[in-house]
Image (cartoon, rainbow, N blue to C red; front, side, top):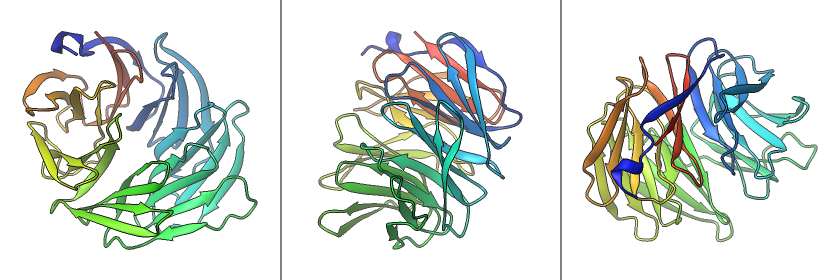
Length: 299
């Protein structure tokens, strides 16, 4: 993918949130996106047409993260009220609330079968919840972190968490084994490469680090942006050719994956860029910001 193919042209601005937008995420096929924020709501959009479809309201505090199932039928969300909400997308109804975290919920993810939600908490734990059971107790608690867990990724057999304690920890659920990579800097976001071989970790020393999953080797570091006090997402393009990250000054940076050079940066928002999400197939991206907007970018 050449630099000219990167999505740097603003095509839509999605407005509706009152206050900071904390995350924006494409769904699996990239036709829709979800956002959540300080105004305690989750919003569903058609970003390509710039249309707001639905608002989901039930959280008592800010909503920090949202994830949708592969079939688009269910949502999970978490935030400052310490609860994980499990929603029906079509009706907007809350099917279940999972309580158990002793602090805010920073991140949520469905497993690929949408049977389990895993949440990352300020209480230094990862918790897994069974969506099919009537029980509201977690089916698993991972509490080997020594500080707030900010982000979580899932594979078929593993739960991977990134924490302010400076570690990225991988838990093999089948083997009951834990691997820990200590990056020496607070980790505020992790995301997986599309080929599943690498983990991208955004750290609070204004550096994004690329880790090899099998060897735990530090492959590369990406710098130039500012990330010191906010949770800022990072991601890879759908070809894994470029790394994308937001900055506290409102910019979005694009780095070459291999040599870590800044190939481009755009002045995207008037305040902190909290998240970036890349389209699964096309050269398209959504970004969210403390400025209250979600922007849609194409080539």
